[in-house]
Amino acid sequence: MSEREIPASAPGIAVDTIAAISTPPGRGGIGIVRLSGPLSAAITAQLVSLHQPLEHSRARLADVLDEQESGREQIDQAVVTYFAAPNSYTSEDLVEIAAHGSPVVLDLLLRRALNLGARLAEPGEFTQRAFLSGKLDLTQAEAVRDLIEAQTLTQARQAASQMGGALSRRVAPLKESLVELIALLEAGIDFAEDDVDVAPKTEIARRIGPLIPPLVALEATFARGRIVHDGLTLAIVGRPNAGKSSLFNRLVERDRAIVTASPGTTRDLVTERISLGGIPLELVDTAGLREAFEEAEQIGITRTREALADAGLVLVVLDATQRLNDEERKLLAAVVDRPALIAINKSDLTGEAEPAAFLQEDRSVAMGINIPVLATSALTGNGIADLRERILALATGGAAAEPGLLTSLRHQQAIAAARTALLDADRANASGIPHEMILLDLYRALWALDSLTGQTTPDDILNLIFSTFCIGK
Image (cartoon, rainbow, N blue to C red; front, side, top):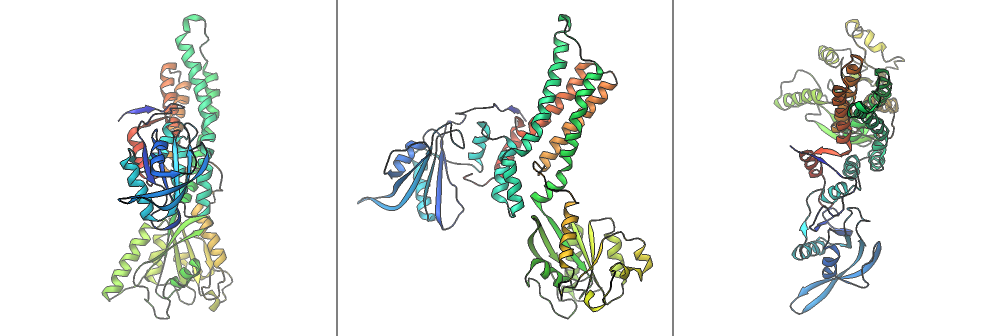
């Protein structure tokens, strides 16, 4: 597994020309075929009949012609935009042909481009070329994929912030200070015989110290960043007829789950994805937990227990009109150490002023429970707004949104490795270890930060990252 040094600017790395359809499959108002590479302009001139010559950053009207035995016939009109190297997304000559979104026309253009010397682009290859040429660092390139895949406005904002270099800007001053410290120690070693002062322990400690807290703070953002990026699953569990499906419908704001007065209506898992405060949340309505004799209900209860085990958050629904049963006591004991909420539903029927008082009737349960409890009524809607706020607070851990969040495990591991290496260097310095050994730790920290932005990254990791992109981006 080789490591590669990515130059600050490397135009002309690729020698071939790639082509792909850059708009989603299916019919649409506009469809785009994109080409990048040295033959882009020449291939385009043969693909379409341009009304005017191509000019950098100018849109040109063109006719899309179909080759037939009787001659060439126009089947569509297109707008062609040309970007000359290095002033393009990929730093290469790049052309975008925007025709009407007919799959037949787009396929014709792509096939003809391939016949004229282009190669079908690999997933993410346009963005990979932008990264390799220095147009984007790796965190910005990953943000392109995240923006395309965003399902909530918060996800889109986070991706746009990262595309703008928010994460890179948080890391840059730390890396600059680290490089200065490395240079100081290297100079002291290389020129020890030329009266260059060797940095004292106090100076090294003074320089390492301020680098660690920002890394700790940045690593802490992963808790929220991961949730913004990936979302969470919330399992709604409880006894039959406690109102789980009704609360589920209230949260998704439509009648998604069937609700009847008969216990055990829900036999299988019902899922729905919502956005709660910009956090993608998958709600899972489950079968009621009780002793079951019918095979279908038994299977549903088994799936409920599986969903409960897999969920990142748990909402336990209790019936305000019923005393706790053994199944509910076991359920509460099972979630006591997990992110969970207790909803005392049907509170409109009891008028209970303090929801926690409901649990006080069973002292053995109440004394061991430290889970937030709130009263709700799926019928009237009382407590639903508070429930949404509690779920959001539980999901984010109370962490505030900020620019430059760590959104992937790769990011978190790089920052953690840099922090660990700096702590090792600080301990080595305090123990009087020779500077040559301290430098090993400092270089480990530098390589970790470089891997974050992609300046030094194994080829197989790069290939894995870009293979998750869609073709044409």
